[in-house]
Image: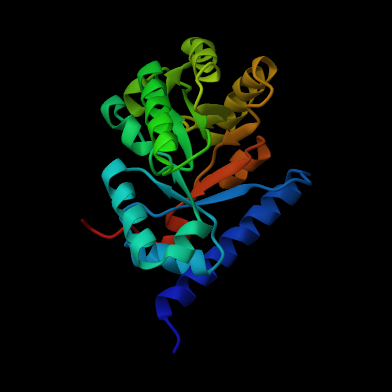
Length: 242
């Protein structure tokens, strides 16, 4: 029996992948781009549908909602749970960082020493308990306009934070993430962020990832060199009213 929601998600997913392929071709790129499907506010049933459709990377913005979905999927669909990678892409309060490290497979939004240290502590504890072994890849969230109230570390403070993360035992500095400022053309913001990402790579060669671009601006981000886009609405549709 067909499931209309699965069919809808499959069609939207195919359209998004076509956009990614076209954007890569337009940019003259031969590499690929990670697609993180953002499931914020959508039910765990949609998460399971996406996993069955071959989605590997799932993204969440809110700590409590993410933890509940991880636990629910693990309890009801353990095979699917093992097949996906959970990405924390939203702001993390320092007092919740240790908990995030217990379930996240990648974190895009490290913007302070406190958050980094909390993640490191939590990952170390999870590894000791055998719950989530291995180092946790993390990206530093850049605030291009210096308005850190929206999340992100100011550009001048980025090198010190990068050095701190690189020195932690249970984290791996994987790269840079950016959410462009609300004003100005996204293409210019992404180009500037790409320059910062390259500076980061010069000091930390392993920090290869550049997480940039969402539903409305992924083409501009890919043109600037994004290695990972975070797409919600284009695949899942409008968020449910909560």
